[in-house]
Image 1: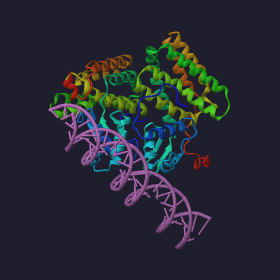
Image 2: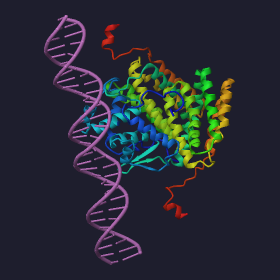
Image 3: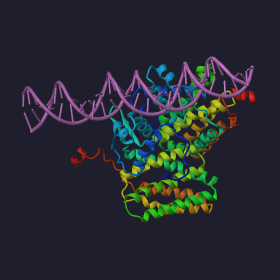
Image 4: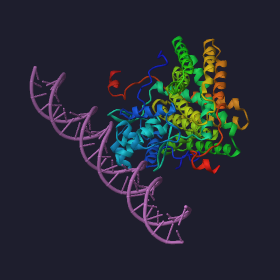
Length: 236
Length: 236
DNA sequence: GTGCAGAAAATCGTATACAATTTGACCTCT
DNA sequence: AGAGGTCAAATTGTATACGATTTTCTGCAC
């Protein structure tokens, strides 16, 4: 039995320094240190990591495959700025796959996996109590880790990678359209889901998961507000 | 021939000639003109398409994101050779998402969509009757197009892209582990699914879809037969 | 001051060059 | 012969160079 939460770093793609750059930028986007729409010029990225444009470009391209960066011909790469419609599709996709992943995970779950999930929950709660940007960023990551860990437990690497993409893009969407200060509301729901899993109530766990995703989405204000807000802000 | 359903999304990634190269190689893999394990050297690819290694490399990297090509550090790119375990995960993923996609598709389907699906079915049947490699390849593609079209109808671009990856990788798996001459057995089942959709029997359609996927998988011989068959072939 | 050439700067697209690593051949020694 | 070792060829990894495109900054006319 390959236990679930294994080390993730089976280098996804290549071998070069590209993964490091890609991961660093991805983390920055997911933790919201980089705002949607921010320009990521190849030279700047290259200088920042002390590599040539070649590698910087490769890393940006990699991120564009994940939907975290959008590359426009002859214009450059930008932190993705998902449209409301895209946001809806992301959450629709999560509603579509997460119950299935949950079922698969429960089918393979071990006591140590449950232990791991509980630990994650604790950590999440601890971070919620703390103040400061650093704690906030860690909390964002921890909240996603719950869903990612379930995917890892499911044992399906393909679904796991897909969930990684969806969770990362969700973070972008929440950064753009989230209303409440933090999506921390979900913490309790994570706990409920673990509880349902532990007591063997699979259907209830799936139900809770769907509600959980719906709650996150409900916190969004998905009205079209185009433009980065410069010119357009004055046209209003 | 432009592939079937709709002109896919906007430029997936970038703007250069990379997409053309990537798509050409992908088609070659999916249509099984390139066998799993075949080496794809950057120079060769570049020469073949009259571009520099830079673009060839980018195209190969793109395909590695889709799981159709595996890139090994300092060794080069090869047409992916999915392991039995990987194959199982691919089909598990399909069983996980396709019913949901089907439901979503039915929720949005229009009469013209149904017309389109029927046309695809007809084309598929026509190709089944024909003889020859060309027809066989077209049939392989047509069979996948049924699933892809459903994903397109669902209106969720993210799930559509995911399905494109899964269908392409499935083709690789079938090429490697398929037993019956052709997976054409699925043709009738496609028809049944359309029928169920048309008569509004959503649950039955999903049920048929699951069985259909199971049937494809059942035609595989997923026993470990490691190595490309050189050394190992003599050890037996 | 506004508007529109047109040039200059910046940035991307692609090719080429060079370093690093792997592969395979050949050659030697036992 | 067979094992092992060294060198040459081929291939990938990364950087740089150069052309193309976009953006920005002028400067001049109105």
